[in-house]
Image: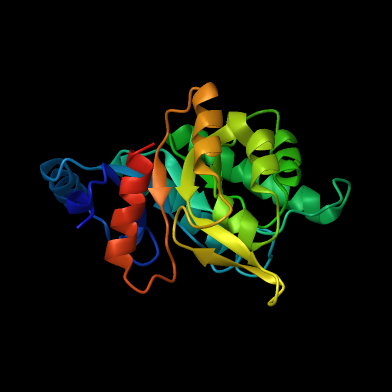
Length: 238
């Protein structure tokens, strides 16, 4: 279906679609051949944990599962594993800040060894706050998945986050949203019908020599096939 839509790559969900523990070497070869036959590549692996790395409960198991997903990503030919890392503490001097930074450092070191990287997705804090945490690690480079829809829905500035994180953006998640003033929150809308200015986003990233993928994401579509097809065409026309 993705190939028929005109997509050139797909994002794989490592929690619900293709789990690392269930993927054998034979399975890797078969899956990669299927993609080749459809002229598709893998843009990224999404590994959306129920809780972020800021939560201590079951943290060791969550970190180990993330490392398994990094291994799977490398086997499948991508180096991008996307997850929201949890709430970034506002105080860089706090124990919570040190905890989250140390967990990310551990995962980053493993990723550098494997050849795939945990790529935090924007949306739970201002872009500048996420950048401050990632800049605290001087030993390794952490890329970012830029999701303007998440930022808009959570009432953050997508434009400010784009300009803060531009050099780190390794993946763009094409999701759109608007502010629902009556409800006091943001809501997701079809791509091109919200506040995310993809002309500005793609133009800005072109100046940064962006070479990554743009992945369409739509959570609550009444007709997902039609809407995602339209979104692929909308982006291709740019």
